[in-house]
Image 1 (spheres, rainbow, N blue to C red):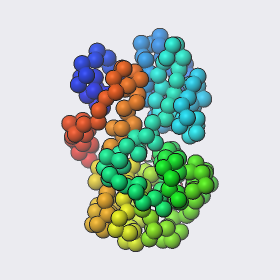
Image 2 (spheres, helix red, strand yellow; image 1 turned 180 degrees about the vertical axis):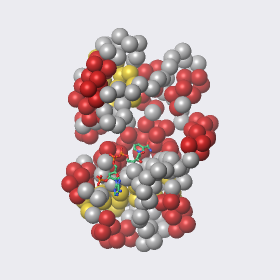
Image 3 (cartoon, rainbow, N blue to C red; image 1 turned 45 degrees about the horizontal axis):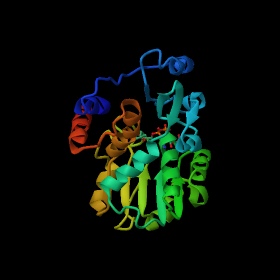
Length: 260
Ligand code: NAP
């Protein structure tokens, strides 16, 4: 829907298609990309790490995260990038201008693939502490390490120590998504200036965001990250840097509302 909208908006004669590829077929699929008429694509779960190992050149984000979400052919060579961190930051820049003026403490809930990009981005933005809380301790430690010296791995039972001084809270678990369990986190102790961001975007208004708004905190949903991470791919494949507009957002929002 996102790329289809941009193709139409910029009058480009191209297409963006969905292909379901089994893990054992990924290498052949990616190597056959040009011959199939594709100039590139997005790669999603469970292929992001395997695709990283198959690309011939990777950008710095992909190399640091060991995962790609965007691939494209350039001179017959397959290139890969990871645009999740860029999408995450652009979404906060748009949705909560000035969000990084105070950057003592950020708290990330979850330590999966999305949390990796978030931790690295917050470390690079200069947060003093990037606290990663996760059910599985080993994954929290691995993600915290991506934030450099600022990274701290904790369990959910230690959140109470960090929330009262947090400037930013990000939900990077899959909890709170339609069809999944609730995310059981209480934001009561958060300072009033803190920004709360949920990467989950189905539903758009999660319980966590509703709680943040009721608390008087600024709340940013996850849709903008999805829209912004798509920009570099479209530019690589079709040669135009597309804009994330209110019209595009409204289109995708209506689709999400239909999925509830
Ligand atoms: P993932 O790699 O599967 O990670 C899932 C995370 O959720 C892990 O930290 C996992 O903890 C935690 N979790 C799952 N069930 C749990 C439970 N019952 N109790 C406690 N923790 C639980 O997923 P992902 O790719 O990082 O995606 C995470 C979320 O971000 C998804 O909702 C996805 O849709 C969203 N996302 C949004 C965007 C966007 O553009 N807005 C981009 C990427 C992802 P363990 O490590 O302990 O298993």
